[in-house]
Amino acid sequence: MSDPDPTPPGPERSAPAQAPAAERPSRGRTAAVIICVLLAALLTTPAAVAYWGQRTLNDTTRYVNTVGPLVNSPEVQNAIATKVTAAIEEQVDIEAILNDVFAGVITDRPRLQRLIGPLSAAINGLIDRQVREFIASDEFADLWTAANTRAQQAFQRILDGDQSGAVQLQGDQIVLDVSEVIERVKQRLVDRGLTIVQNIPVPDVDKQIVLMEAPQVKQIKTIYAFANPIAQWLIVAVAGLYLIALVLARNRPRMTVVIGAALAANALLMAGALAVGRQLFIDALAGTTFGPASAVFYDTLLAYLERGRQVFLWLGLILIVIGWFAGSNRYGTAVRTTVNGGLESIGGAVSDSPVGNAGRWVAPNVGWLRVAVGLLGVVVLLWGNDVSLSRLFWSLALVVALLAVVQVLVGAGRSTAESRPVSPGEAVPGAAK
Image 1: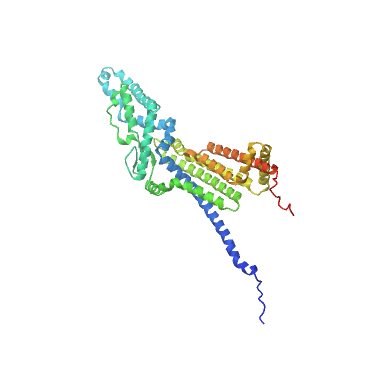
Image 2: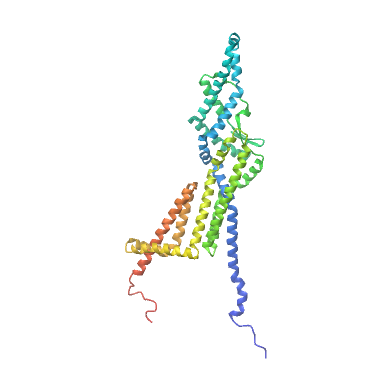
């Protein structure tokens, strides 16, 4: 007679073999969440910079709208005026011309020699004044817009390897051609009687302003060729990774806090990178004609990226607060209970009106309605590619208002359902027993 089998029969026997299979989906889901949120956090800053470059540097209209206000900057006006005035005066020795004109007269009347200096200074002052008046005029503003349109297109050509245009790569320098400004100023001077400047030649080197030293331009062109095709979609991919992580997370309030922290951390990282880049840009142009205007040029060109960074920071902080209040902590639960109870009581008070009829439909569909409200807020924030703090706060206010309305309707629907009399055909469970 054989010994009885000591192994317990039935489900207990197969339980150890089934445990790993039950744990496997949970582990895979957790790994997917971790991978998605880590990838999104690492790519947030590169995606923001790539999107800014794609929407600003590659888009002629956006670029011109960005740098257009520079025409009113005193620093930029002074830099251009200094360059143009120096280019003209360097080719026209006013004092030598006056000495030649008055040579015979001065021989007879030597005291007239004393007038050469003041007259020379007056003419040079006239040149400088005409230059600055032109740069402050609407005519120059139109020329600035046209020049920057060509500059953006020329910069695009540089990245594509084309060396023609107003902005050119010469050796390790990117330079801006101001020859058209010089020619227009010369014509203004001639129109005012200073004909001696009409035919003066201006060397090419005096017609250019060094915008930046670019010893790494070859590497920049390589990066541009690789990154440009995916730049506009990278930010969408990052948003998708964050969304997937949130959907797959078992504890969504906690994941909301994690996503908010990642966005805030990236905003701080961008702030540091922009500050370092600003100082490097200023240092690169120090000692050049454009040096005094380098800071305002940098700040204006990167204004759109700076606004995006501020939005990232505030959006991150808002998500941290939302995740914290949506969590299972004592204070968050108390706030949610109080707010929801108050809104639903308002809905209950108007449940006899048409609001109650709408509430009966809203109550069972409240889950996806909240998601739709959140997506509407995102659309409002991103509409027109004009992301800003004011747009963020307006979209947040819209989302909060709509969620409040939804909760009021939920309260009205529940109150209507509770007060509706039970029809004779409806049986109450357990009543027949």
